[in-house]
Length: 405
Length: 138
Image 1 (cartoon, each protein chain N blue to C red):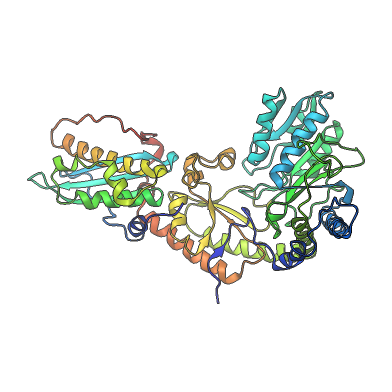
Image 2 (image 1 turned 45 degrees about the vertical axis):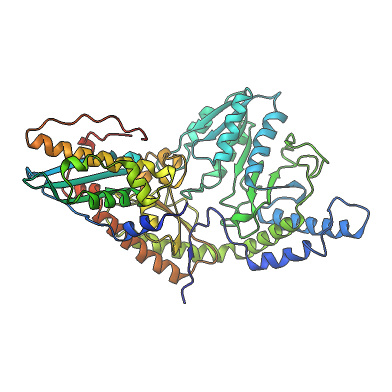
């Protein structure tokens, strides 16, 4: 029996694994203590649970538990990592290098820093979504204190050459921060082997609960510090005040443990399903994969179906299948995806894109059904698309004086 | 954001999808919008010798609301005189389909498409183009 509705928007968020929920439950009720209460068993039990989770989280990324700062999620980690370095290392310089397909939590943090007197270079990405390493190195100056490049992109799944990036950062004595929200738990991430100084990720993208995440801050070679962005009780080695979200942290730890054990088999299975989906949908005329096919997360596929608008397309099956689109119409902004535009796609192709994000609970039957539904809807909408008709008649659409509105 | 039942119905069962012979003197064609804006509407009317619209067809690239707006517009056009057709206001479409504020531009596009089709018909038949005020909500 096929399970409806089908959830293929796992880059937005994932369901909690039932094993995660099971681990969390006692920490809402009987083990409700404050991990900072040092003088009674309620506090001790909570602290012990947090310590254990810290080990589980650290292990997944090859870190030491002392290097894990619990946060409310990846956005907080982006803010704390970037602003925290900018403030802590102000005497060394004020220049940050990032790229134009970063998540808004990074881009808007960088814009904030520009207002505070910082200087930010936004690298452009190549057609495949990767940055150009020579451009990165050329952008480094004596005042550069931080490189902030995401591990893998949320819309297209493109993985950046993190080891090459960290080698460049090391060579020039610049710190490397990475938003690894989409990568951790999906592909192997190792802060030592990858040469990462700061890294943020969140539980809810890896079958854990919402509202909890972590910032990895390297403790040696070099020892990195960030200026706290919230004042308070000095939790998390003074870098992040606020009572720890114990049940969330316990769930996060469990989610990390499951990913460590199951990531390899999950990735193998999901890349097989993803490839099946992609191969079938690319049989449609004028369908294109966005971003690198080679350097890509195993569970992600972003496809543009030319001459069909993304939101209109989703409407054909969104009662049964959840995906997302780079089309303007899905957001309040009416601007199509800046990530797709950064790859050099025209606005028309950006409007025509769908993102498929598979997950641990995706089945082959669901993929088969999705292939059928998406293909049928694309064909149906092309039959009512004036652009498709023009394309079929061989009319050059650039020759038409479109009234942009 | 969820869609109104009427939008869903027009999306699933669009009325009057198709193409009329644009070279015919009796056919007026309006092509409005732009691919980079995410919606393009082509609306066509066929006018008989008495100035009555006897057929209307559309093809639309766009979201469900854009498709539904054009579907409604073609339904309303059939049987109207050209002069009556000019009175179709985008807000009538908004009301008919319960469009939310972010989708009002779809109805504006449909109104523009009607006007463009009528002007095309007029020019073909030696009449002057009607000058319309710029749409307000674009």
